Image (cartoon, rainbow, N blue to C red; front, side, top):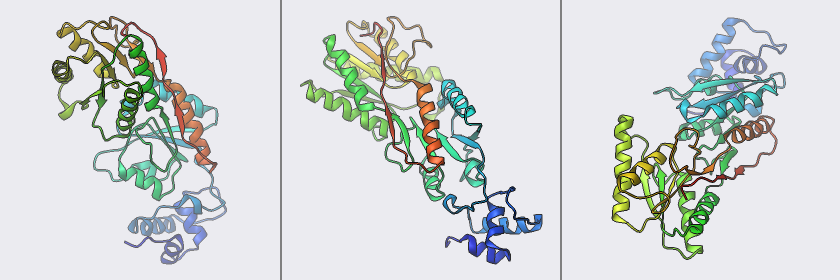
Length: 335
């Protein structure tokens, strides 16, 4: 269907372009007056033609919503630290935060269909359809640690390559030379591509053998947690059995770290003497792992704060540059 313009909608509805703009932008503060019947007619025509106001063409009368939306599929992906950090940052600007979940079989979420906020904050990969809608409707959006490295919207991500270099250096200091990288999901996603490239380059530069990789899917088929954990442990045992030279493991997913410990225990492998372990998540507060795990920690509060500040720039049409943050080493006794 040919994209309809605001001028054409106004003509079909028999109103001025300014009135059509006021109706579709939900603008209640300008000097334009229109009846409920007029508003219904304009909105009906806009819906028929799948029209949504272009933010760059809004009238000078329109006010901002004074709100941002956290758009998500799975709320658990966003930690409490991140949400609290967003709320604290936004409270300083006098804005409110709207949580909007993408529902199954819903083409576009409410925040995009109804234009209820000034911008979107996204903490996970929501799929191509959402990315296309953000681009199509020119919605200010920022992806925070969301597996997005080549999108048009600004991003706040971690330096995954540098994390691999750091992990390898820590292993080498204790004489470990054959690292296994546990991948969350498949090798194609952005996080994993960067991690693979980083560890391969680091091994090559230090004249070490090529690293090993193991893909671990997140709970395939929605099986119970106990069964899922058993599957992960078996996978780790299998690769170590096939490659007994493996002497170090990098766990990039929170729930796999405890599986690494349990797999080593089942195989009578001592941590860190036989196998050294590093986690890319700080799980010290969650699990009493012995020996205490060495982590490359993420400052989640800082990431969320940087995301809010970057989003404010995007909303104000200021120049935005992607932000890359570094992991912080929390030394334990697993290396």
